[in-house]
Length: 339
Image (cartoon, rainbow, N blue to C red):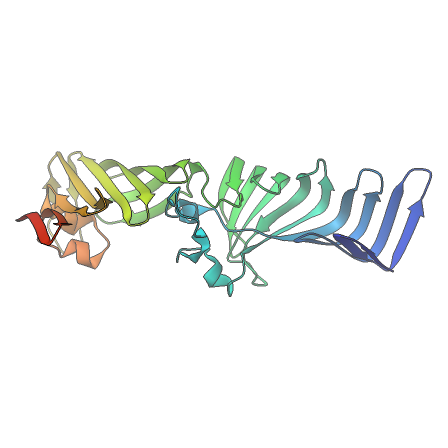
């Protein structure tokens, strides 16, 4: 049986329609499509009056959705004057990484019920954006409350990497809104090293508006201390944008032991790092630019950074310039400091 009704279509091995209760029941290889969503299930109950469906018995769904998790949600803010689609920018989860198509998000569960026009409830299932037979990552949960345009809320959920349980969350909020930028906590990261010991890092992303955002960073090191920082980015207009990042590291006294080397003490210390860049149009004729790459302790740069360029950088730089045109004259002023 195949049914085509405007924006919705369905195919199944068998369909029963009960006119007295306005219910249609489809069984066997059910495939239901509505707009950009596609649901495959063993059985589907559909209310012809309320236009709601309740697929059950190992149902899976797919709908186009840009990925908004981890740092993908931290895409660059766009100017309020610019009408260019943000999808043109290169970033994790960008459309260009999916062959110019929007990333698909896959839901599955024992039962998927539509409880409102844009809300659905998934029982004993999960979701992922990976298309591999064994997904690189997936979130499984006892109950998933899904708003098709904004978010997914999971309770008693497990974050799995290659089917291996990694983290447990009593409750988990995952943004799937089309705007791609959503306020919330980013995915935490865990690590271990000889100097820092066990490390735990997390961040909170604040989408202030379409033209600016901020991120608050926190790092915990079991051996040496903790770090706190922040980052602010803005786009005022095409060609007028900037970002600045500040990070403060508070180290306590520690003793480092390495193989075949004598143990050495690490004194209590505080250090900071500032990185930023600015390009701002002052008027139609003048533009200002600035850049800062400054750190207070070079040994911290060499010890903590995993970036080879940063770890081997011995130079602190601050510079700024203003240039413009008045009539037939070109005016330029600049300041440079290098240590």
